Length: 507
Image (cartoon, rainbow, N blue to C red):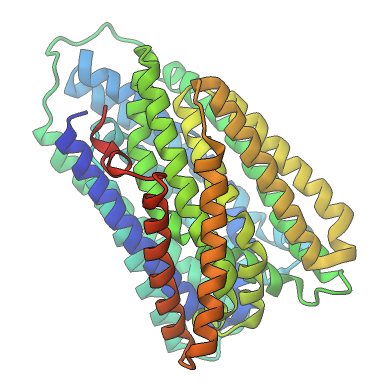
């Protein structure tokens, strides 16, 4: 990939991701104020079924589009590319229609017997109609991935979020006395219309791009059967996604049920909404830059691995892990000392603040787990990541059934600690083995952690005794001071240098 294209795509992904995260958080804050944590919990519960259905709608076909179109760009024709995309869209639509029938007519059974909440019926029926749009959009985005163009996908996500917010705000604001089930359904009306708008947008972008497309070969290849070629790529990916998505859905269904039966937890669906819909989005917000960077660097690393350039693989892996560790550690410390204030500032909820503080120590493992999982897939270690993910989900379900009814929210926090420590450690170990990576544990983890937590706790203690100002101003001042001194500390110890800042330029 040319450096200018890489930098352009990096900028596009980073800016769009930041906008999407900011918009998502502000929207969740507004929505929580309108429908409460119980409404957010109901939305997250239905959303888990939505994601499982979406797995069927896309069925790994996006990856098939990307790989087949990439090949066709080199040794095929424009007509061949069009044939690939058309067949993939047709296949995706067939699967999506089947999913609609199952979801729409099975909504009552799913809500009453599986989700144990009849208020989800209308939401399930509503979201069913978004699946064809999602499938078509996924296929076209696969085409743009093959073309190495980040702008169409990023801009479509921005449009999708904008339409979603506008529709939901208009509906809920117009009908202020909406019952919870109708308010939740209104959110999924917004999701459906947003998917439709995004689908139309990427289709228009595809038509424009396809007219300008030129391929390296002008001679049509020997005809081959597309369906077996698509299935060969999509089925192994889909099988793993189906199982993993199913286990995640089961977990999300069990959590509010078990919390509701706990003596210490109270309203299970409300607590579930606080955890999954309110606290976790805040904890993952700082990972935006890391996600964008790793997304763009992984194809480079995959190419280096195929060519046997082991030193490049090790260099990129080390830089990503190091950057992830350093950033996640300081935000872990900041969430620990500001969590209670953030919960009050953002959601006006002490309970969310408690969750932010309680979960803050495992933030580094959350980030490292996600980043290592992506790197390992780039190194053709997807079988390992699949086994790890499925095993983790299965263990979490067993632990939820064993402990959640008795110890409630405290058990769930403990399960999250165990899960993230386990998968994070396993993925890091596998990455070290697969790439030959050598990590300096003292410089990458121990010294940054000691510095970050000592600094944040100390600054918080000093400011708390000196300043008596509003929470939002206090939090902003504390974060700025801690971030400046933290990175100065890292630079003074030689933990970061100019090479770490400019490593994107290295190939």
